[in-house]
Image 1 (cartoon, rainbow, N blue to C red):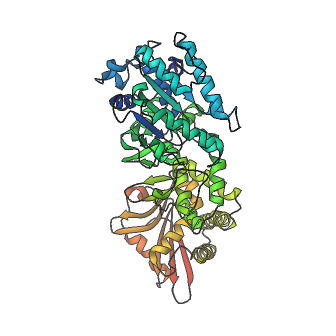
Image 2 (cartoon, rainbow, N blue to C red):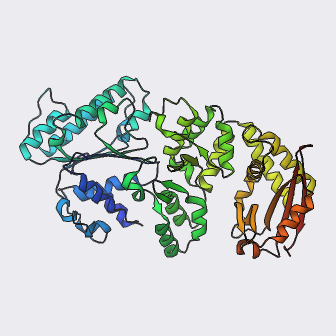
Image 3 (cartoon, rainbow, N blue to C red):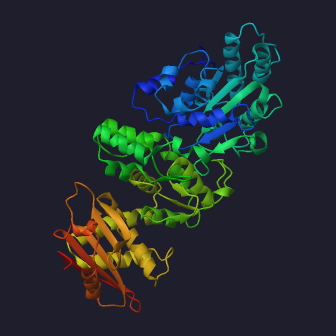
Length: 525
């Protein structure tokens, strides 16, 4: 066992010793690509989405220096036809690039990488001589010629150098040259049965497109068939909740919401496991290390970015085109680039069918608010504080304060909304009542027996507050909005609060541009 070659099964053994959600089906996808044109794969996901666990799993499965059958015998992969064919059959090189970026900050970092890997591999193959002018690839070619055994090469945090060094730096140029030498040369198929890399960003760009266009990419934007293998699915979290007697609805509220490819409900796995260990849900996002990055990017404030962040905090979605992003964190040229970076970092989720992004859950929304405050976005920070005041005024039945609050929200958000438009006013209300998301599930246009309620606030579990039904009207007497609420047949979600319910009617007069409010307590008749 070496530091980089044939590291064995210990990493995955430690994973299996704890709570493990079976993601071994990933192995079958990698197996099917071995010895084919698709043998070069790169998976990019946000931090704490299981990339390193998957890398440890692959090391344990392929490494011929150990017997790891017992670690996989009860997992999904054991029943796959390819399981026996590739189990513990290859010499495996494992490289975590952060081991070098944390130690070496100079432009000669790739010299250190090659020197240490070459020495470690030579120790494993002492009968294969190292020549003075050998780089790592030259030596690997000689090893494979001697052993007739191609390698599996696994690189974790492949883009660590790209994140640490600016584009155009000597270290970046050296890294790109090394990647090209290792994985794009004519000898690469001879030396490697398969190459598997992980990182936060895809590898297509960073000025490496010509160097690495033979890699198949599996990203947050284009996950292909690996969507369900990083992050937890709803069924997996439901099983964990039942096993550990956790409130599944709370786990959904805090950690669900990612759409990755066709998987429409993916949870942050690290946060779910942290919550289970802590016995309660709260934000674990700050520990991912991505917080400083999001604060930096939203500070750029390209035109319309503040408005889009505010809309998304209110539960809205925003259009995004990720295709122009160069996959280089140091080259941000537009609002779309900022939003795309936030998708890759996990601060936003991406709906590829609609080309829209949105904040996935309560945990991320809270960290986004922190980032906004850190950047002194007074416009957004003030809106959040006013939202708190608006909810308090609603709960105490202060009709004039509610009317003033909605009026201010309407005025302050004319940059993103058509002023005299009913849908726009509904959107303004979502923004105005953003703060309520801490204690309420906020539903826009909740279906009723006769039409839709414009905004419904359902108390979260263990919150002793009334449900709130809000109806909007244009150029009508304010009591007509209340009467319309009473005439409708609302779903059981609202009906169960008939003894603890606030009916809120809000009207807007186009000519005077004033809002009026009426609040009643009690049932709907």
